[in-house]
Image 1: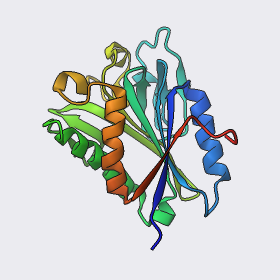
Image 2 (image 1 turned 60 degrees about the vertical axis):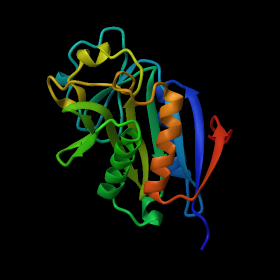
Image 3 (image 1 turned 30 degrees about the vertical axis):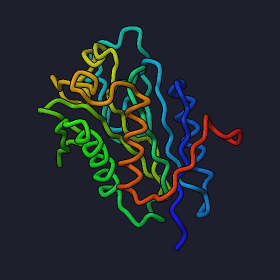
Length: 218
């Protein structure tokens, strides 16, 4: 049996729209032989509003742009110091459903934080990962042609104040938290390296191939 290979792309800090459109292009143009990829990135400050997003949850965006996007879920915030991971996976080929993919992503974050003695958990009725009823990771996916894009955002070591300008994920008063003060990963790079291990295990990939940046074809 051939080893399952996952291509890892380390993008550094990139503006949100460029990466979003590159994800769309990759998903639209991939075929049955296209490799599965995981994109690791940080974004400059931006609010993104999912397909179910309601404008009343954006309370006071101020100078931070708001972008309406084609993922599931409500409004969230991305900014420096937050680990963003986009799984571009052929879930039909992996023989998993959308709910199972969400569960595996959430469990990989729970498993990673457990290595730091941080007790995190998922909720059946509210996607994401929580610590003491405070949200540490948000999740929003889109499935097209049996393939996933968009993904997860884990708060690591960032300015948390912009979350107060929105109702995170559509929940008024939802308190957000991050890894660093909990004794979890102290940097985005550390969090990314640790999460790669647990996520690839959850998804069943035996081999990871690392790249810097996007391919020229994207």
